[in-house]
Length: 260
Figure 1 (tube, one colour):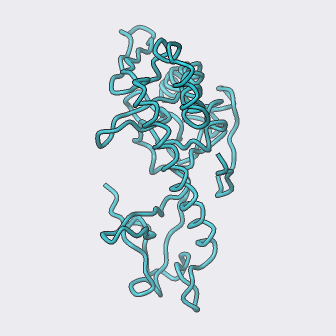
Figure 2: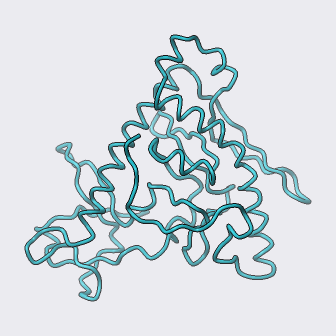
Figure 3: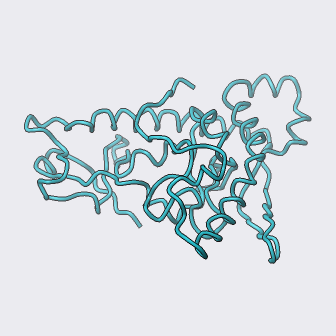
């Protein structure tokens, strides 16, 4: 488990860090939290659903079928046209301290005193480039995460989220059953009153429709699983799996539209 270290000029004025090289740290992830602001970018590539964490629902993108992340190569290259925002801030994140303030933290394994790495702070005691841009990205992500949470709670209040038993066909084997996920209850959604629909307008409805529409991407998971299984028998997984599955690799950076 990653140990997160609060960053401060007191402790890290002369410290350095190793930037993230690819996304191999996600290799074992089965889901990734998503934001309302990125729904349009997620839909062409991911199946969306909900999981229960800390007693509430959280919207996520499905990345695997129980045996690792199907969207990343062994070398850490992302096999998809869009990298979810929750992954792009690593090795940094914002955390809340006991006083309720947000503080910048770094994954301990990326912290170093090696001067060949990137500095955390400038000689003037300010965050060194590109850190300010990254911190702004994290702040915008956190702000939109709160909006996303509120929208999810609104859907749950209307009892629109139900358990989702996923079943994936496997050649020569019994279907693979995956539990623990939730989806929008389409029957309950279609029974909503005009008043309830009005109350859910905007973000909650966008999230509900996105989840329902994204189920058409379920075949991506089975295709990726089959392709990677076959590749292990014959050769390494190609660096651009989207040459086989619709989509293409894209650069991941901190540019993002958080107006949603």
